[in-house]
Length: 113
Picture 1 (spheres, rainbow, N blue to C red):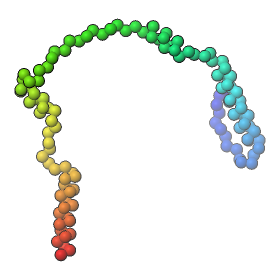
Picture 2 (tube, one colour; picture 1 turned 90 degrees about the vertical axis):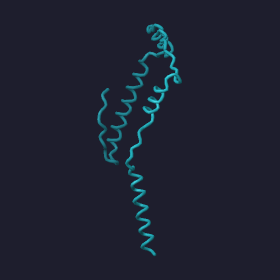
Picture 3 (cartoon, helix red, strand yellow; picture 1 turned 30 degrees about the vertical axis):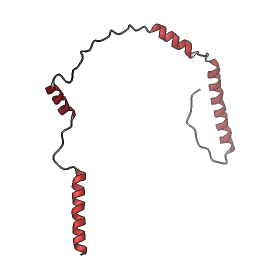
């Protein structure tokens, strides 16, 4: 059954309401027939079947060298510099705005005296 665009009918047009009800009933009937025709699926059986088809071989263990952070001081210093973000010497926009606000407040207080 092909779905069609719902056409609006005037509120007092009884034939339009009957036509809409007929289409809705046919639509519900079609889907209930489809639901009955579908065979039930056991999700556990599907998962078991998929698991038996997929065989993965165990991954070999990788040997990792141990890292002695205290042995090489230059390496530790280089790592800490790389991790620490560089500070920008220029003031941020917030700092500029705060400084401007303080100047305006001081000027306003002088003008009030």
